[in-house]
Length: 73
Image (cartoon, rainbow, N blue to C red; front, side):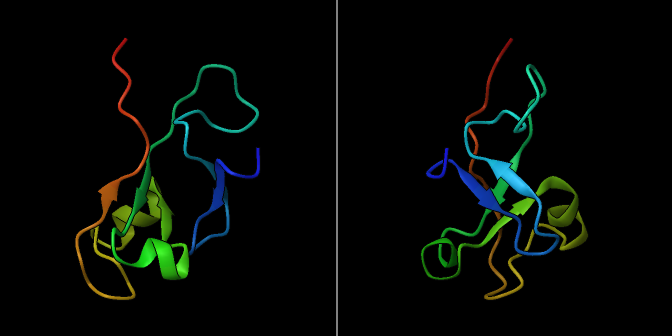
């Protein structure tokens, strides 16, 4: 599980890049990332903190993008 779990850079919450919340069976979560800073700083953000940051990276100021796959049900 270590290669799909990342931590939010603001609150430290564990996030899954598969789109499912760790420990929950059916809940889905959205993980945001900065395309530039993800490699250097591990800049991943939960949905609540991305909203607080106005969907901008606090390190470089670029627009955050969705890192989790979009699942249609």
